[in-house]
Amino acid sequence: MRVVGLGPGPARWLTPEAAEALDAATDLVGYGPYVDRVPARPDLIRHASDNRVEIDRARHALELAAAGRSVAVVSGGDPGVFAMAAALFEAVEAGPAVWRSLDIEVHPGISAMQAAAARLGAPLGHDFCAISLSDNLKPWDLVLRRLTAAAAGDFVIALYNPASKARPDRIFQAFDHLRTLKDPATPVAFARAVGRPDERIRIAALGSADPGLADMATLVMIGSSETRLIDRPGRDPWIYTPRQAGGAR
Amino acid sequence: MRVVGLGPGPARWLTPEAAEALDAATDLVGYGPYVDRVPARPDLIRHASDNRVEIDRARHALELAAAGRSVAVVSGGDPGVFAMAAALFEAVEAGPAVWRSLDIEVHPGISAMQAAAARLGAPLGHDFCAISLSDNLKPWDLVLRRLTAAAAGDFVIALYNPASKARPDRIFQAFDHLRTLKDPATPVAFARAVGRPDERIRIAALGSADPGLADMATLVMIGSSETRLIDRPGRDPWIYTPRQAGGAR
Image 1: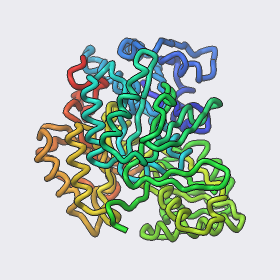
Image 2: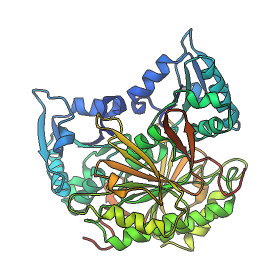
Image 3: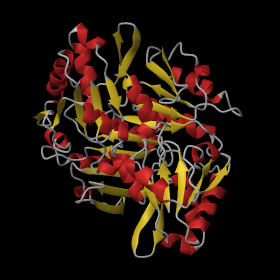
Image 4: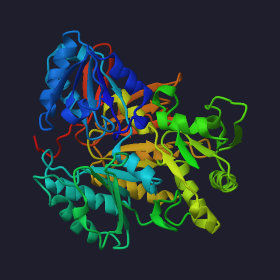
């Protein structure tokens, strides 16, 4: 079976390997909107589910694969980054021994932070970290501990899942915390749905940014102390983090 | 002009967008081995350079673009991650004002940590950071500070540029430092040249791993306290980091 990264949305970011895996599948398993991205074929069975049952979805995919089906588990972005691959291996570890003999191939994809970075300039040009603000699978204290560590290490920070309908306040709390630790002039970007028709980019400074600009389709990028803006005529500035750091110029 | 990510090597990981950008270019600029990956065309001019002159290469590319050429700056992996995009924007910021009016598109690619993660299982399934051990552009103290922060935050750690001919000892020093901060049983993987003919994967524990397994083509992955191995018959174990953390099960 294969775990396939669809990238952020547009076909121009779907790797040939992922496209080939989709073509070879007899069964697609995934969150409905991702399954819907794959064109229909008469011989392709679609198993779409909502986004709250990842582990059930993983088990279902493994059962199908163990029964001899050619299963593609589809995921937005990179399935290895805050996505289905981890859920799948959780299911394998807890499941019947025979699942450990399955061939499981993970096909990487362009993740949201990469699409956002490409659109913004080069904010991930130096050391960075990626943190999911979703707290239904980890305590909020651990998120705060990681934000503290990210500031202590002066990493560029890519925030995934910054807000949800159930927890719209998490991104506000994260900004409140980071404002106690980082320079208010630090560049921040809200990169929403990059590459899709509803793309929207907003650039601000940490001290005055409105965290309400982030929704579940937004990747929030927060600079290091070295991250810089380059003004340009009539357009948003570029944001980049130099390869040099710590005075080694 | 376009800054194009070639991915880790094989064509199956080159996005259609990147392939199209290569087809449309009149001039290729980049480090020799990356330029060599692009098939020759009679009308394609190749400007290959060695790997120590990124900023000169960036300036040369900008001069060509300002003169009206269709330039593709090529980079392995993702140009936004420890690669050419940051060098290019450094050159723009320091260069003539007219360079700020150029259209510069960055085309993301699969980065080494993603290829490594896909091959290993799902080690990047939860919060992680990426650190380059190259110290010709930053003081070693900053690397140690970031390793300390990464351990304090219990991030999975992806180490880029773990060793060079000039500085083969840096990865040994990094492991010595991490061994004072993290459990010796922490899973570690040395993922060399993933997807290329000379691919080699080695899995170990932090306390007993041989850092000498890392060379410049190696991505070193170091687990968080939650990262787990799944044994399987006759093959390397899978490595994954569960979506849950901090006891939120």
